[in-house]
Image (cartoon, helix red, strand yellow):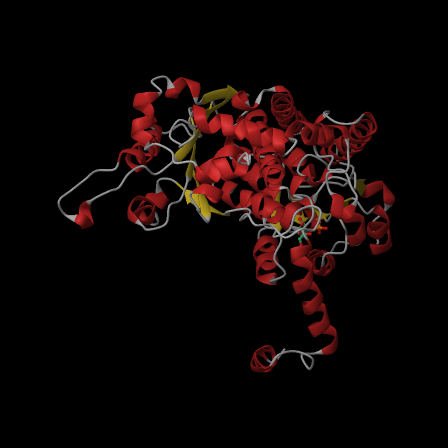
Length: 498
Ligand code: F6P
């Protein structure tokens, strides 16, 4: 019987990385792709021409092309919830109705951003953005990355139900000059609503006469926001078919637009749109998200890597690993296919990471000599984010490239403790600069890579039922106490005096 593409990939014995460069002399060209201000170097992975062919077979077997079209055309790509996933429509690439809806809602959002700038709410210096998960991580990443040279207003993002976060954020804000943005796709998330309630109290105590009048809602459930007490004129709705972790492009991006200006927000959308067009049209061998997913699949399935690590060699991107943890692990951390069949394959690797060069002095020991094989992704920018001595930036880049080279080459020694096996894979993504447009393209690249991974595995990346059970049990304990639970849980509740 002919072997399936998956079996062939599982059985594939790749050459050593250093040998691949000898066989495929032009690897540093042929496994490099340039797109939207991003230089993707896949040459230090075990992907070679033979393996690429097998992956091309896998894309045919898994119907990647048709599924990609379904994503862009608003087909049901989220079967467990019977929904489309229309984040690309927010960037103008999607089905006509979804694109038209996104445009109209963007216009409404822009209107509110401009009204705030024009003083419709009096003097506003601060925005307190209350939201969690996908309703917080994107704005946090973008404002931290792009707002370093100053923002139009000071944005604080509070997600945790631990009010220490709220206390810390509000300590630096003047309530009379603050607007509160409640970001929640469902407008039912306990943490967010609790923080929003406490924010009302904070405004009242701070002498604001009409605290409700300072609230803006960013949601796909406007009725709930209305019910909660936010006036219709200050509700910025978005399409229900945009998933929480894919929602930075719609009104969840409101604080980004308010802090960085509408033009920057549009540039970010355009950068992402460019990546959409690339993903939609390029053949697999020239398609950055597709090639990246091939590497992910190979290391998880063939090499049995349980984790992958991302290191940002740029302070501006320090929140990227955290953002990607939700995107990749909430999307692909599943054990069944979209049809509910148990999967034999392992799914999303655990995504983790940090900031270079700091991480070199903390976790890189394991990457170079540990018994786990961890595919590493390096991110760096050609242009520095500061005006200090350019030697800093040079040192940063040199360190970044040195790590990739060292992981690959290794070094033998008579002393086993001083020996490095090498042959450890890495990918490097070099950005022209950290700009709204390039960051938009980078995030869209990761979204599409996550989607391709899901297609290759046959899973649905757009639901997240795994988070529901814990939520339900927390509710049960809050409402009915611990009586129905196991002895350990009961004892903990008693010990904490909850
Ligand atoms: O609990 C998980 C989750 O539903 C995420 O998918 C989502 O990003 C987050 O909670 C917040 O949800 P919401 O935007 O509806 O408040």
